[in-house]
Image (cartoon, rainbow, N blue to C red; front, side, top):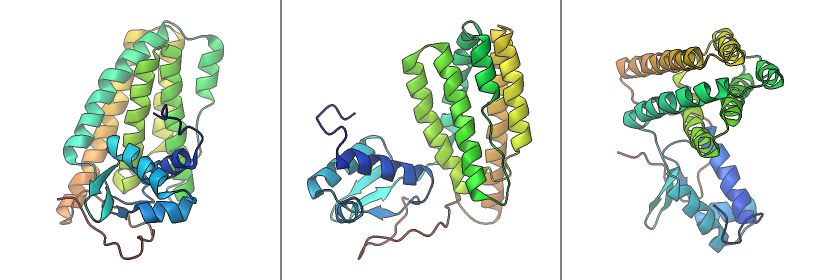
Length: 243
């Protein structure tokens, strides 16, 4: 990504910070980012700010708006559905491969990845999502296919943002931990077929929860939920939503 000599520069630091804020929904879908704001926030030059925003645009996190700046992307219903479809195909394959390669030490390390979650504590919710992501990426690492692992990391980032938008605030941590424990048991036993089936069950359950949250939002007369996390707009910029 930063093979043009920008690795380690303020442009890369700005890129990572903006990307993380988008994933955590601290920068909400529909918000406007400007080069001037990136320069002010990160002490970089306008040229490097433009580069960072350009990389984010190439990844689909923001979209350029002539004479305005960049608008933070808003996932569509199709985006969400495609994420679930791709995750199931990819993670089934990774689980089956991991079952043939996992060591006892790796199985134990997987069992140690969890986070305490309280519905009333946003920080613990973020920690639970981060722990779940680490678990799935570790399974991918054990599977031993770097390209598939990189694809999964990108998908999980997209899913993290969807979940931060409030589509699964009824997340059940005990259910997630029991699902992951069962998956580790299947992996440790070398049962790739069972591991793949458990992955499908977990993703299907998550899809149903998200669909249920969307249905509630639509019944209330709304659209895809947009989190109301305070985050100031650049001076003179207006807030907008993609049609």
